[in-house]
Length: 188
Image: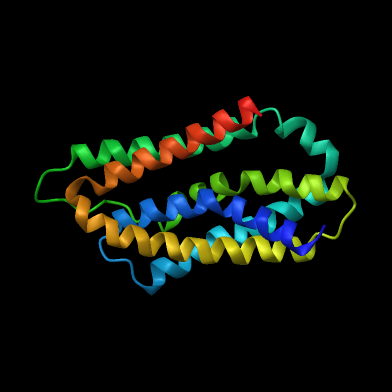
């Protein structure tokens, strides 16, 4: 696999994490270096590891997960997104800040896994082609981390413009990403 193909694949895989990071940047009151690091590292790490896991699992796992990987991603993103929407409307005016930081704990883990499931399939494909996995995985992880940082910065700028409903908009974005993943896999 040539370098240009790897870079295109890496950019395509990073788009879900990029979009999720925009919504995270909108809902975190004032994203600081820790937020940027946790999100970029976690998303980049999972995007790096999933192709390696897929590569070593080979066709055995593909048979089981390929049929419903899009449903897993859709379910995880929709769950987090709907929870964010609910929480944004259930808060009072004086309590506008999101209760949970999406760059910490289970929310971060769920988002990182949900946005990296496609990378597992890429690893399976690379394994089937019997190509080396390390360079593609490193590039996929690094590019995802870079896109994540850019996404947070964009969300940080958009959030104040949206105000109190930034969390609801972020939740809608997560649900939309889940629906997009589902439609792409069902149509493709």
